[in-house]
Length: 347
Ligand SMILES: Cc1nc2ccc(C(=O)NCC(C)C)cc2n2c(-c3cc(OC(C)(C)C)ccc3Cl)nnc12
Ligand SMILES: [Mg+2]
Ligand SMILES: [Zn+2]
Image (cartoon, rainbow, N blue to C red; front, side, top):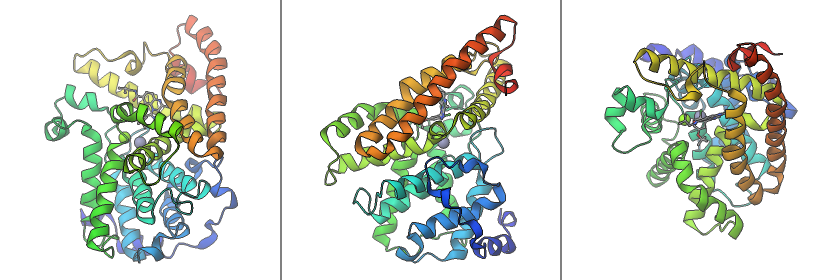
């Protein structure tokens, strides 16, 4: 396990050149997926320096560099839930912290902001490209470990995060007071568990009336609802970028969903339509997901942070694009093409 990250790899990150100062990097329109994988550890370091975490928490750069490299190694080469997804989710956390001034305006403490950023980076570690329900169906080891508590994959991502922190030379949080360390781990647990779609539906109504009542910084429930909202927004941030990006991400998500569907068929099980490459109608499903789930989450965000309005508008734009591309999909499906073939073919 130790052979995975060499001392040279760590050095390359700690010495990373500062030419990474790309001005549009902190704009909501920036698409982090265009950053090359080998450049991403340096960008993670740059973001954490820029957010003031290194000085505030007296973080040792070589320890942090080793942690980042181990987290990247912890992600698998699956189509969607890979390191590039984790990096893009962490980049959104960086954008939210800077553009909404979450620390400066007292929405989050420095510790909560650190936990938010680290949770985004680690929230899908060791994802296998299959859903929680697939863990139960296939009686996976993870299901036997966690199915009694639910959120099977999310509990595994959390345990992998803790294990990485406990890997020799990786605990960049070890300069925190024992009280702050304890608090930080509790926050990371709540934040990673909040990325389970089922958990989101449980608190969605409460997040809605929190936004309507007005966010109360002294209310611990509001704090919890806000950090959970910030996690789901980060996890869905691909949908706030331009159509080219959204279409590319859809190809990755359905590559993963259909691979699971193929597996389920081999296991003699009937996959859900959304997972079946022969039956899925991608535009219809995406329109449902964007209108029923995604845009609602960002509208709540925009109620609390008016500058998030641009994100809601970007999602509205993508909804229009799915509606207009639906007509193309329907034409081709008349010719016997599956919607996935159309998605990957149309330029
Ligand atoms: C573009 C886009 N389409 C999606 C379509 C369907 C589903 C889905 O899971 N349907 C339920 C079935 C599987 C039981 C998720 C989709 N999705 C997500 C996503 C969001 C998640 O959870 C939070 C962040 C809490 C919302 C968790 C996992 C994922 Cl993959 N990210 N992008 C997408
Ligand atoms: Mg996840
Ligand atoms: Zn995710």
